[in-house]
Image 1 (tube, rainbow, N blue to C red):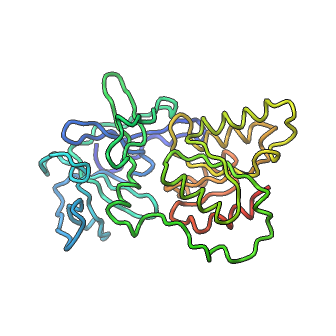
Image 2: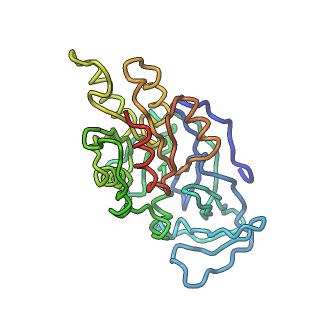
Image 3: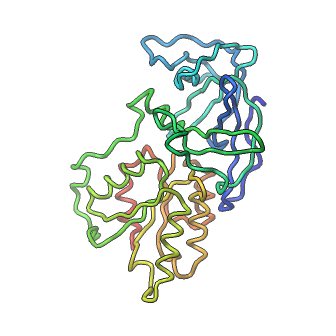
Length: 307
């Protein structure tokens, strides 16, 4: 499978995803197809990069764009010889960067439900926490990798950072201390960064590690005998889009279809924000979208949308 990797565009809010299955030295891995621009053969000229990270195999000139190529086997500490006759480079885009990942082979595209994606146990997690989900397809086990975390470990300057305290120096017309934000995010690191960001600004938070857990919290409050409106409990929700069990688009869709919850503003916070994804977010009722590199803009967006 080479060149354009796009599969059938998924309808927003169906809790489905498409992954590209690839291998490294026999082990199977996956990447969300929404992050894949194209897949090319590895027989292209790859030039060394001076004083680069050990995981950087080199750089390629792809139609005038200079793109770094990560040797994924090297980064995962897997012994895997390079064979340009069969190896492939997955050209990915996320967090407003384009990067290539050198892999052994690329197999196929799978469409599946987030409900079938399991969160990894501690015993199955990588040393650096790179596994974000595990998929079982027939007799095969596919590990979904956190490519944002991998790229940030290679280049920390591309990593998300907690905004400085003086970024909140402007007075707000919102009584932040009286507001509670529900944060749905499966990445421990990103979730803590969002929470710290909101706490520094003065907001209260409650967390959920995936969309299903967030939905369970919302269902629980609507079942209470004294429930009157959602703002008794939550004034806004921030949700990732890629999450095991239930993704952010499906979560927003369910909230906006529920007359007891639909008033609550929902903000999508993702590494994959694009024109197409913004359209999908709007189609399920999102009240705002922000890309992860723009976390410094999050509080201003929350201030503008919070109930």
